Length: 264
Ligand code: SAH
Image 1: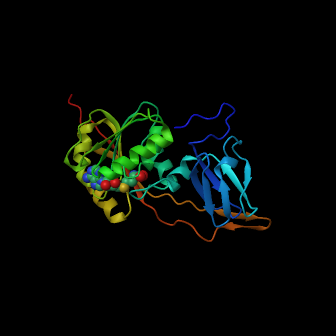
Image 2: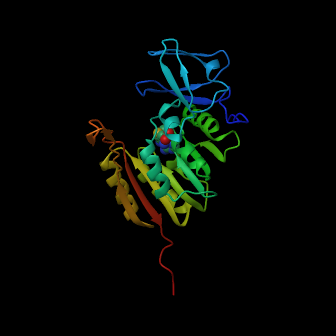
């Protein structure tokens, strides 16, 4: 992660978001002498470096580009990807569902492009990721280092999570892979009592199969939901939902590990 300029000005090496007059967004890394080409003209990086966040720079075509530091949401939607990332609306829901906070011990599998990893690390959790593809693991590590710093509390192990989990006493396990029901038993050994399992799945059939596996225990409070985010058009007297929305991303299923019945 690049340190900010003393006066919080924009510095070479950091990523910034350029927003053109049509609200199209571009994520670029500032390099001395660098040039960014878009449909709306060319922007010199040197015109941005040293300026304040929130400034507007003028491109070669005379059009202005607003310059902002990217939010987590901008970063995950625009960063380099191997696998499909989890949408920001679902990242937010997963963080709360998994009750993630500073110091929590978390296992994540698979890490893919590292979008969920960034959200977890930024919440202060101590995160171990399992991933079967080395190229994805490298992309995830680079994306996390870029967003959270080289000293992020984050490690990725090349490992198939359906074959077992080495960690113990975990606060939560987050799964984004096709057959999470194969992980349910391993997860029950790796989670602390009361620990939380959260899985993200694209179809309801997969979610139902997972729920059947969770029903066999030792889990309680199993729940499956989806999040719908509908933006609104608000302009003078025209106030209504936007015509388009992302209608489907994935289903989130969670459950808590029980300790089993206590003997009297
Ligand atoms: N949540 C990620 C995207 C994950 S995509 C993000 O937000 O960026 C699913 C990932 O799971 C892929 O990278 C895939 O290689 C990995 N994967 C699939 N099966 C796996 C398994 N059994 N163990 C570990 N990783 C697995």
